[in-house]
Image 1 (tube, rainbow, N blue to C red):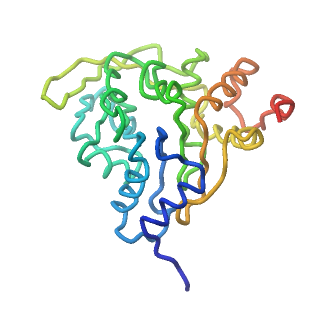
Image 2 (image 1 turned 90 degrees about the vertical axis):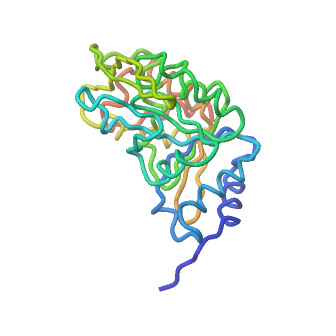
Length: 266
């Protein structure tokens, strides 16, 4: 059976073809398996992204929501594994990478203003605060790449629901979480958690794909073998806010977003 081994140069070319610019701020949700065989493996994938975005900022989620809870409640910034994939765990350990201090929804960043970008999340008590890293993506006119994964991974939409104050999306109570900082301090950070009237609300976030593509806010392409989608963060957030004003419970079912809500823009 024929198969291709990709090189770093191939992946950089694919980023360019998809519309990523070297000076962009880029958040990447990823599946290493979907990319296919790469000469040098996962490290070469991270090298390709880091080198291509040498003038910009590369951001990967390093979330720990799957394991941090009221019992196992200390988030060790330097050592706690990410629960969202191989590339995220390799990336967080790389030289120059800065990890934010959010106990459940941290991100790791490399490049321009990485330390400033990642700072301050320990001040807030919600999963995706507007003043935190996910809000900063909006302010920086960032892009988000779904690298071989669907839009059900779109953590930003959790943020949008939070910023829009959609009812029943956050717990009323706080879990007694703590943060172990890189210099060894232990900070108390009581934290509200995501909740919803249904299980797996993010499974419905892919409803956004059709309108985002129709309006040119998103484009499809490939990175290696991985079918991928690149989205401009700010217009995605603005459009989702508008949809939620029409229906705050938009993501509680699989009903498509009414075309008349966005077709007039096309």
